Image (cartoon, rainbow, N blue to C red):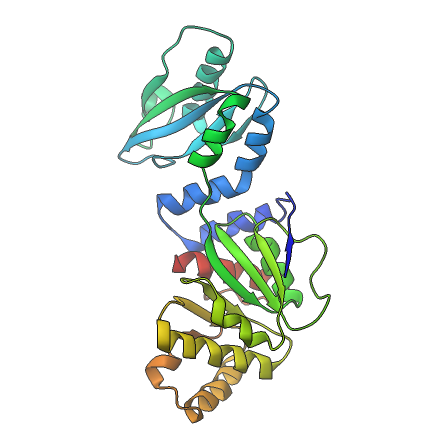
Length: 300
């Protein structure tokens, strides 16, 4: 198994499209995605210069970000966002007053109405906490991005595009292939690469709650992985999403083969094929990756 790390935030434009496609996913998911994108960069910068943590501690009504959202403000620049607009503009100014040593409150309550030039209609309570390098052990323990386990079987063009598209999203990707040296050298952070032969053997020790995507170079391998997933689902019931790349024709063939192997219609219905949110018709790897990532977000 190889464990490759890098700090690239490639495909951020795709990530924005994904969120729009996936619809309203819940504030906890959005906060996790927020952390996955930039939190490690923020902590690295705090080792070199002081900052103020701006946290949304409570909300009421319609607001741009939910409770728990974090922004790290430096004398020059910031990382993260509490929602933009005049709310964020005033929060940045207030944080920098604290950084300059001004005696200002560590809490603010803002109504998102005409006085802020925003018509959200809700209210937000913000906290402001000065931090420096000495606070990092506590901060790293307190603000840990949560990632859902995802097993991706297949290192082809779509698999490579998916790994990049998923990079800023809240997934811990286990990328599995039966071929040697298939994985690129620049694998994003949060991805574990694994060579497994036979490839379906990796299904047995997937983390409980793993979502599974199947897109190997071989239909025979795809079928073996599907069978292994269905057997595990029969015994443990802990794979909430199993998706198989392919056409309706491929799925019809697979469905008959699964029936011949004794799987019930209810068991077979646990497999999603084709994969990707409806309405995305492009077949370019990057387009497929966006559609599939949006579907995964909807499954959380």
